[in-house]
Image 1 (spheres, rainbow, N blue to C red):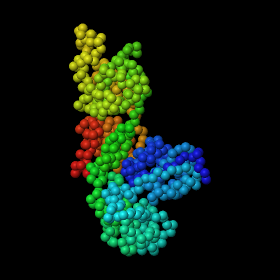
Image 2 (tube, rainbow, N blue to C red):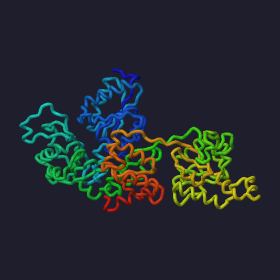
Image 3 (cartoon, rainbow, N blue to C red):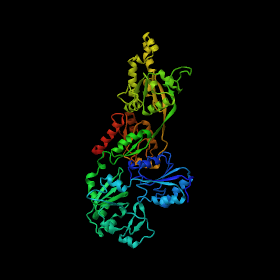
Image 4 (cartoon, rainbow, N blue to C red):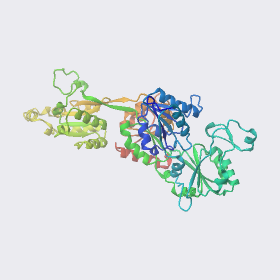
Length: 578
């Protein structure tokens, strides 16, 4: 059947073994724009978090009855989405590589028969990546000059010989599959192989496999390693030998997903195991920052060994034009007044009325300049004005636009900024006054100097900003340059990931409030034991909000990402918190 341009296109994407950093650039670019993502149970939350928030997420690892969807049903589902959604991008996300025991070939053949266009996006196979994360090279000069990838789990048999089952010549497959018999591997040649043997999906069968290899002449002392949940925070390596394989699996409770690697290279894992030495290895952290702001801290935490689940709690949107908000006590000013504190949209020409511009967030910086440039202005309109920032993060963002700050409080909070600017006003710093205003002050009206200076302060904030600054500077004007919207819901896979996380990272009170609202385990204003009980916070205000809901809080010394990451590492490198 010929391909139809009226169908959607299906991408068979290898998700890699778990660590989202191992997803290919090609795979990531497709997931970011996919309309539908059909994913397996073993695809990690970190990879799923890279999908478009608008995508329809379909878990084919389990049905509502909690039984795994049959492969034939998955094949038909891919065709169904492509046919019913013309022009769409359908991503079939599979663990590891689609064509390495991933049954991607079966899915591709079904698409060909249906005339649906498809593309294969290779993934990093667990056969290589997982041993590498355990410090085991699959080949090494003088030890192994080849490696062989073998399936330890074959297609279900329609009939099971009960006598063979009793004799142990059968095995139960992983994830609840039916009992199978007569694993059709070439044990004679495998036993003679001098290279590294790597078995995928074979934990349930490994006692049988080990005995057969020994029977065929392989050295019972051959080093062997089971690596559970490779490249994820729960990765675990269990060492054994061929003759102790079965008893080790039982004693150490080795469970799927896991791979088995045999050969002399296994011994290198005792020396080269690098991942377990990372300070945040084995930790899953939920980062609640807005999507466009989370990449920096995600990269830092990932490099230190953590698995990061990006779970934005708020979304920010730049307004088309700034909106003016004044202190409640001034809201009765008449519409005919030229007071710059009136409610309503503003014109950037009114920037001439202000001498101090105060930014309280990176969002405020980005949205202000976006609006400024869209209105046909550039940074030259800020010439001669003093710039204030609430903290170092916002100060750094201003520097990206070529703007250096004149005022940054030591206490990186709204209160700290307000007190600093009020102190500036109280010093009668007349450099901020116009020649006409200076004349008024010099002519004996100095009692008005504070008000004159304060009225020339402009606050650039979001719609959810509290009145802390306006209460400290009641004559100042606030422009709302962006609005903050809470995320309405979380997908099921993300809820499951949150429940199993070690901690959650908060950077704002709004993130705390919405997290509690969207977390199903929260009840009666407190956090249940199932939710991460530990929280890492930026700033005292955020810490206070998290404490109110029962979180154990750990707060950064400074309101910077570097300080927060340092505090997280300190917390987990103390013996009591491992």
